[in-house]
Length: 110
Image 1 (tube, rainbow, N blue to C red):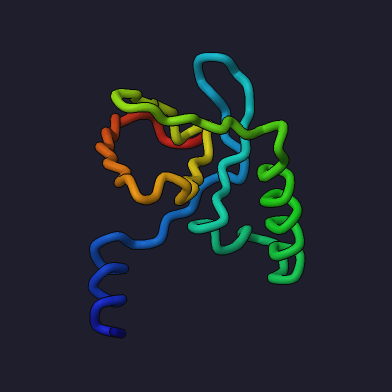
Image 2: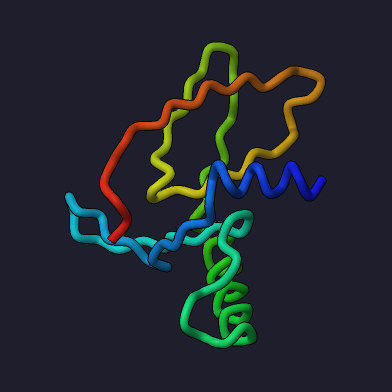
């Protein structure tokens, strides 16, 4: 398992991103943290980082920021991961969910 972890980290080394990023087209800011991928906030103590991230994750999970997508046969959904969090619910059983991901190169987060 450690060999596999080392290989994955060698192929995809950890990177640093801002906690909030600016949309270069609109000038608006958005949180750029994710519960599954953000490990800590640099340049603050571990306890402060943990507390800030917990606050941000709770804020982002508020219902007024969510869209509940109702799937029907033939529907397609697109979202921009720079400004949107994605959280799939496993509520489609016994059907299968098929996903095609397209990644478009863009600017570095600022």
